[in-house]
Length: 253
Image (cartoon, rainbow, N blue to C red; front, side, top):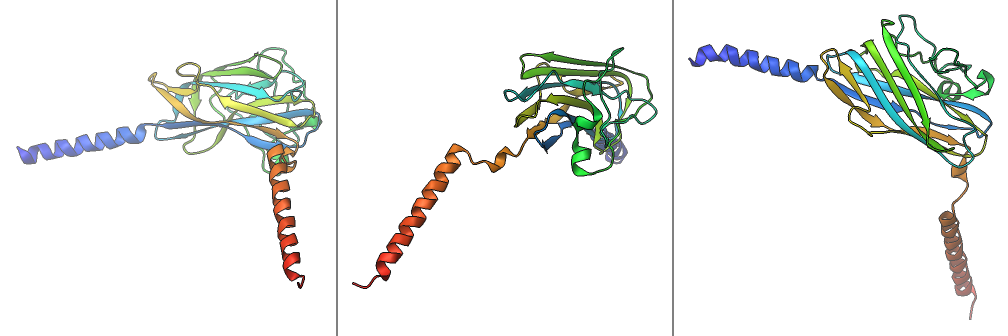
């Protein structure tokens, strides 16, 4: 009986290992960049990375909240999700490619010559959108909460195929900026279950681990804050006191 059950045990263990290996690990992340504080537009890429054997999906969902300092944004952000087409769709390029929403008649308010992105800043190779079979319906919504904040909701449904262990561009958020120094944050929101996830062909949901990003406009880091000025003054006072004591000791009595 023991010998007969041994092959069954081996097969069960193999099945367990295959199941564990098939469980995909999904992550979504947004770029972070420091750009000059000039009027125009800034493109921020949203990427996904999937490990595991399962690379076939029927739904992609992503939800992000954006917030900016006062006077940083000059309008409402534009968002463009991949068409998952057979042909590579231009994404982050140099010069920049306008990325208006998919709905009919949509045009970008950003001029390519006044738009920057990570490829332009870093001098790297163009980053195309993730491709697919072209059988995907997409949805892109930007819901402003105020002049400086809002929520972005993205959805793609159909035949989606990812490549294992590769960072793949699935959407671009374009922020129109005034040229004032400041910062823009992009945080993935878990407002509802499944806000950021991939759903496979068997309707199994794989929640994404997320990493926020954003844009720093202007090198405000080189300007000391009030607390930093205090530390500088304190250090200067210590130095003057030390010099005074050394001078007193060097003077013969």
